[in-house]
Image 1 (cartoon, rainbow, N blue to C red):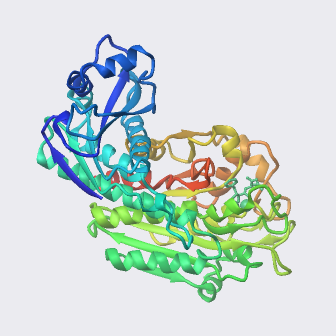
Image 2: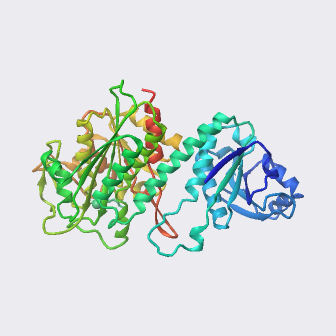
Image 3: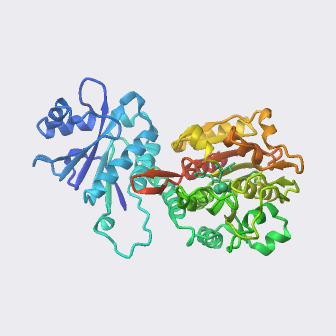
Length: 498
Ligand code: BES
Ligand code: MN
Ligand code: ZN
C-alpha cells in the first residue's frame, strides 16, 4: 500500500473514495464534512435530517458523488461524541471504514481529518493512528485456500492523507511509526492465525531466527538437549507428551551498549494446548492453536524494535512447546523441578502456561534482564473478569506497572490492573513442593499472576494476561488481533529514555 500526503482540501481530490469523519453533537457541520456538504448541494444535511446518518461511533455510510465532486464516492464515518474522541477510537473507526471501502472495491482512498479534530493531537501521533487504522483494518489472514477468490484479490493500493498544517517531518515520522507498528502487529496476527500443525515450536524458532537475522539481532535457540543440560524442567515437563521438540527462543537487541538496563520480554509459546491429561472439553479446542499469542506479541514487538532501533537493550525469551497427551505426559500429583530450583506440585495439567513461563522468566533474569514483562494467553478466568477488549495486568512493582500502563495507553490498547494481595498466596501453597500450579476456580486469573511472581524475585515485573484480547470471536470465527505488540513496542521506545 502506498501512502501520500496532500494539503489540498479533501473534496477536490479525484480518488475512488473519500472518507470523511462525522462527529455527534454540536449544532452545525464543521470542517471537512461541512465543505463536502456544500459541494454536494447539502445532501449530507438532508441524509442527517432524515436520520440516515447519525454520527454514531463506527457508523459507515457510503454515498454517490452525484456528479458533484471528482471522487467516485464518499464514505461518512461516524465517530460518536466529539468530546469523547480518542486516538484509539479514531484508529479503530478508520479500520472499519478502510475495510468497508476495500470490500466495495476501492483501490485509491483519501482520508481527511479536519483541523477542529486534528488540533487535539500531536501531528505525528495522528498520522500514526490513521496509518495503523487503515493497515490493520484491511488485514486478512491468507491461509491455505487453493483458490484465490475475487474478494481476496481486492486490495487498497493507494491512500492519500489530506491534512492541513502537518509538517513534512511530522508526516514522515508518523508514517514510519504507523507502518512499522502495523507490520509488527500483522506479523503477530499471522503467527497466531497459523494452524498448530504448521506452526510447531521448531517452526516458531525458525521464524524468530529469520527475523533476527533480517534485523541484525542476535538469536539463540535452545533445543531439547540443551534444555536438559540447563535443567529447564518446567518447560520439559509440559512438553513431554508431545511428538514435537520444545524450544527456548532468545533474541537480543543491543541498542544501548553503554547501558546496564535490559528490558526482558517473555512470551508464552504454547503452539497447541490440548489441556494435557486433564484434557479440555471439545468446545473450540481448535482455538488453542492461538496459545502462542504471547510469543507472537513479543516477536511482533521485536520486529518493531529492530526496525525503529531505539536506544535501549531488549532481550526476548520465548519458551515454546505443545501441551499434548500420551503415556509420557506429566500428571496431576507429580512434583517437577524448574530452572530456578523451585519445586512445583502439578495440580492441573491445563495450567501449563505458567510452568513454561516460570522457566522463561528465570532464564530472562539469568540473561541480565533488569525489568520484565511477560505476555500470555494464561487464563480463561481473565475473560470472565474483564471480557474481550481488556488485557489483565498484574505487577510486583508499582512504578514499573505504571510505565506499562502508560505505554498501553499511548499504544491504544486497554489494560486493567488486578490486585496481588498477600492473601492470594494461600491458593498455591503445597504440602509436598514449594508451590502448586493451580488452586481452584476462585481468583483464577490472579492465581496465574501469583504463581509467576515466585519466579521473578525482586526484579520489577508486569504480567499481561491476553487470553481475552488475543483473538476475536468475529462472524468469521477465530481472528487474531496482535494484542500486546504495540504496547511492548511503545514500552521499548519509552525505555530508550533510560
Ligand atoms: N491456554 C489456556 C487459557 C485460555 C483460555 C486461553 C481460553 C485462551 C482462551 C490456559 O493454558 C488454560 O488452560 N488455563 C486454564 C487454567 C486452569 C486449569 C487453572 C483455564 O483457564 O481454564
Ligand atoms: Mn492450558
Ligand atoms: Zn494454555
